[in-house]
Image (cartoon, rainbow, N blue to C red; front, top):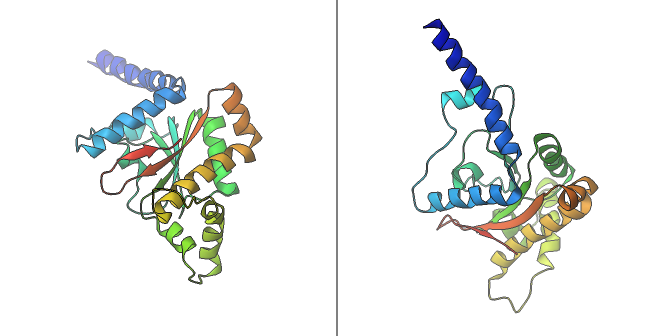
Length: 217
């Protein structure tokens, strides 16, 4: 019996490293495929709720191997792990109001890419974003809220009057595009990983009603 317990424990221990190796070897396209499949499950109410067991918690005590980074809004309606039907240790989430870019966000992305081996970064705006709505309004806010809305102003200038979408939706998508492009331009390390190590950084837009994540070009 003791031999069986020891063997079982060894197998569980070894499986952690096998799983970690599989995740580390995931390409950006493979990671994206997992996210898309999870989002379809979320939309159709067929979630699997993976990696949410006691064993998973124990496995993650000493290490983490997320396969994707999601930069998104801190809005309570936009939880990445639920939207993509993932579990503990799967998604490295970076959140603030308006999913704006600053040094803390850039440093967090760089950490996930360089030290955790992540090859896919998603910048995800969402329908009816309050931070973008505030940026579009003329309401005077405190200096702290203004620091967020000021970061969104470049996206306001990207609005095309010929766009078929309303100004709010268009600006939310433009903000995701702006953050994506600025993230790539502002960090030489990330740029190098894109050119030489298969990193991909992509913008996206989350629809609150349908639950669909639309990946932007």
